[in-house]
Image (cartoon, rainbow, N blue to C red):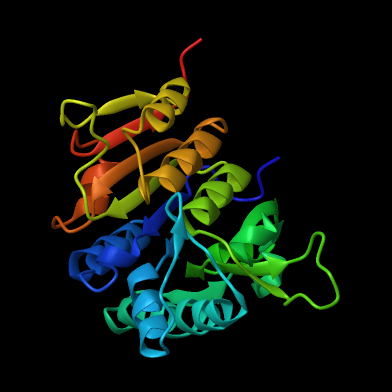
Length: 267
């Protein structure tokens, strides 16, 4: 049984649009004042990459996700759970909203395991414990979630307690765990495109494997589509929209045809 109302909307704020969130903040506050329950998951990949570069570390990615050695993990945790999380939370509060910044560590929200030793401390979600989200939502707060998570399963004594789990993955797992009504990804593109360059306005979940195998979806779009597949199986409608456009969240929730909509395959 879901522990949170099925009216919850999960929003994933991509790192590429995290500093152009003026209308995003307005939309979040409008939803909150209308009585909608919203969970915001944010990224910050470009910010992390910049901080790593300042330390002489070249960022490396595999299929759209960051290869995370011990030094990179420290920067990921400091930037995402620290600066990016608190700046985003502060922007919502300063504009009149009620928000609390947390990470996947807090309340044991996101617990995972290392995916592959070759990828360092990049992890996969094993368990979601949404109690902390339920508590904050019931109290009228908007949870702002950084995807830094707990290294719980299979951790060796010498391993860190933290994991870097992709923010898109975290958003999809949270949406699935709470049976969210909608999952909206705010990106810097206008949707998923087919081989001819046209935006696919509607995609059923059983088409995602084809998009991944054909290479039509690549880079950072890979974890987004996998997250949509996970959430859609739980009945969540997923949207991938251009977060740089004014009021992209409100338009998506109202059913605008902009971007790409992913739903469970019809039977």
